Image (cartoon, rainbow, N blue to C red; front, side, top):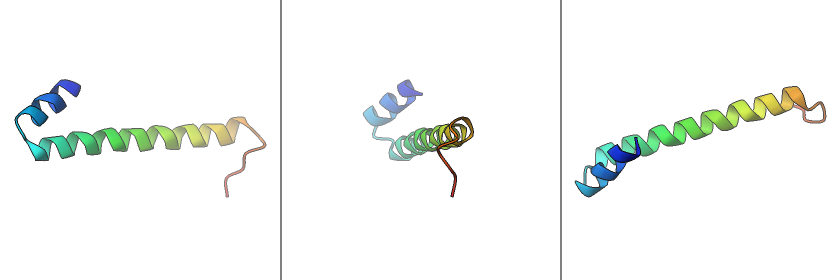
Length: 49
């Protein structure tokens, strides 16, 4: 995916750059959500509100 991003930047293919950044951001948000949920299940001091 990083190779695709580099080649898209070099060719000024902005829609592809936006799509790759959007996908990376969605993965990042999803991983953070899973980690927050697991932390609340593992650590009893943390509560979901």
